[in-house]
Length: 384
Image (cartoon, rainbow, N blue to C red; front, side, top):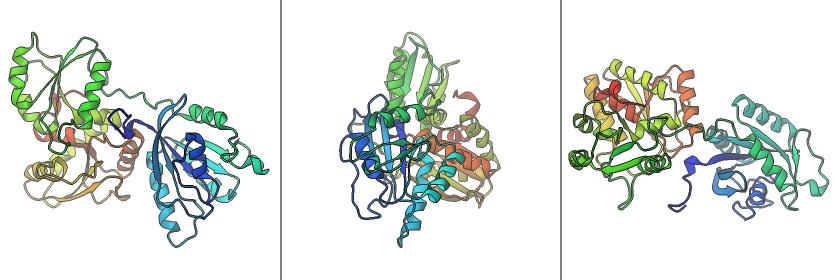
């Protein structure tokens, strides 16, 4: 994916489900009009979920998640099916292939319904005389039959709330002057900004704002060069205290991580859960979840800075576990608190599913930026 592509996290995630050899990979290739998934007559060709980003006519940027057959009885079948179930956490829409294994298809249909995942049911191989299952769309991936019907069904299945969240949540209006105070993160490749900075800058330009970029070291000079105080200051959570100390009176402040928390998750729950930080005691278990799978640097925010701040606040060492990427424990009950990154690498569905699990298990869950604002004593002074 190049710099001009829509980030994977901002794409509609469509998962393909069905029995082995039902034609899941063929359907992906059929929709894409190119070979993006390996097709074979050998059962179990697709093992781990395979993700492929593409553009669909009339729909836009999507990610297809091609999965293993849910009737895989091989030695690793149970593990593969477990990975498919885990992939449901990020699915905005499901395509369920029918007509191969009705009992299992019914089970998965009920599972999708219980998780509120809009589902398009498809009967493939109708050119071979296969009867179309009631409630499904008849297609032939091999015979190039029914593509427009399938694309229309996918379009109709897009959740009404998809794409509605606003990264800036009404914090700015056209013509506003916004100061972005951006420390140059060593985690980002040389010559590039980190993704939340890029997305925020683009969102400001789309809204017709005047974006002024600076670093914490040059913030005072940037402020003095402006004719009036900025309407909003956006910074990195790690320098909240530094930036807040230089903030003109009455100037509003937020961070890239806090904006991502509003965009991807449940900001009100994150803010409420931050109060649990004040109740932590030495030895308490805390889970820190980051979407990235980067090799951590010495000043890493999730693995070093936040744990140090938490332990200092608790008055002793905490028992901190760290997970990254798609790893996330099913049982959250041992933890007194979960702290999640901004989630810029995840789609909104995945972050909200994690929030739902935390709520269901009665475990407070907050966000990097919100946690740091609380720990530095300015949570009530930032906007989100």
